Image 1 (cartoon, rainbow, N blue to C red):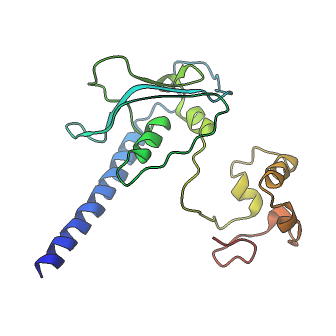
Image 2: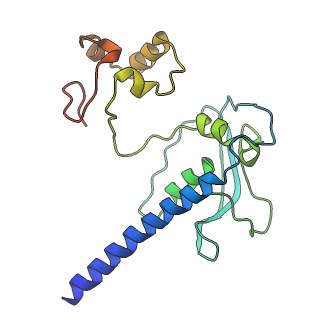
Length: 193
């Protein structure tokens, strides 16, 4: 009985913390400087990432979720970040995509730069268009192959086919009657998770 109460209380706490993060994100997204970056529309093209002394808190007065992280990733270098639970990967991704800001009360020089451009000076949409995150859990969207690979309709069919070639799925997709317009659904016979 006491175990059930404690377990349910912990579960409720976790759910409320998740809800608080969503509310915090929704509140912060309304206040974002969507297109007010201080830098001209200069899109990073090489991919060099420099993080220096990064510190971040989810809420004012809480513990640091990221504490004095410094790392330099060369342009073109592929990395993978592995971590145990509460290892800070989500926090780091939140910082890189400007969902969260560096701790304003931190002492010293701290920054996140992509190709020597401080991300706080980049328009949010440009920054988020620049970064790709590959999740650990596979997800299939219920849409066509074309719309799943190019949801903003920014690429030609040739470019989409180049990506499909790169990942080795051309034969599978060419076998479908509608090719790129094949619908993907939860019970899809084309792909499985």
